[in-house]
Amino acid sequence: MAGFDEGKGRTVSTSVNTSALAIQRDVGAELRRLRLEAGFATQTAAAKQLKCSQNKISYVESGKRWPDDALLKRMLKVYGVEEPKRTEILTTIRTGKSIDRSWWQEPRYRDLITGGFGRIFPLEDAAERIWVHSGTYVPGLLQTEGYIEALAAFGQKDESALHRELFVETRLRRQQILTRGQPVTLIALFLESALRAVVGGPEVMRGQLQHLREMAALPNVTLRAVPYAAGAAAAMGSPFNVFEFPGAHNKTVVMHEMSRGDDDIDNPAQVRRMRRQFNDLADAALDVAGTISLIEEIEKTL
Image (cartoon, rainbow, N blue to C red; front, side, top):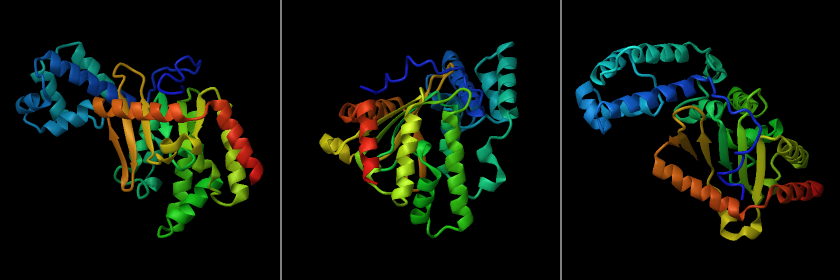
């Protein structure tokens, strides 16, 4: 079964990702450890002493934002943090904030990436391993330019031509994480219907299927299709992603692709539930060889 044990034995580098998000998560995990060590069993208890909201502490500890200077100063004092740990934390934060701006933070993408839609970019960039169930679509990280353009032409008719152009560009740029020097390991599930829908016409879809076969040859990419014969599993079209990160925090995050944006969750119970769901789908999926055979079979019909 290519479930959550998949990819553990690969030779792909698993060095700690130096992105700002990874550092931000490490800082959050360390501040959580210091809170517990100081005797504050809950964020609510700490919030009373820090004179801030529990939500503010939650955002910092989950690595979703940096602590502002005033809050960090109070945390270090209330938690009884002494040198050299104080200097270590301050230096780490300065390092994280000094990292060059990532491509998705460029001004040209500002109007496109609003609300939760931009959250997936830093998660993908910082992840060591990603499990994806893309449902009735080819996984976004494996889509060709023609396939993406067809999706945008149909689903974003009310948007400007520039908006659609930037949408295609950002999706293609996201895919660089699979071929960079320290590539992300991708384990992708999708329904058979994702292969049979002739998105963009026969020529575009033929190119998409060829691209899937080429990407499946990479040592860090595993593709498996859930066939129609799998019954109920073949109707599970709701997409989700599970991100696993390197580093001391070792956090796992689940992201559901929502109509108004992406919602990421690191609640352990929710993460366990989505892991089980992924493994259940993997149990019903074809193996890698069977998936490639299915792709080749469909390709011949186009």
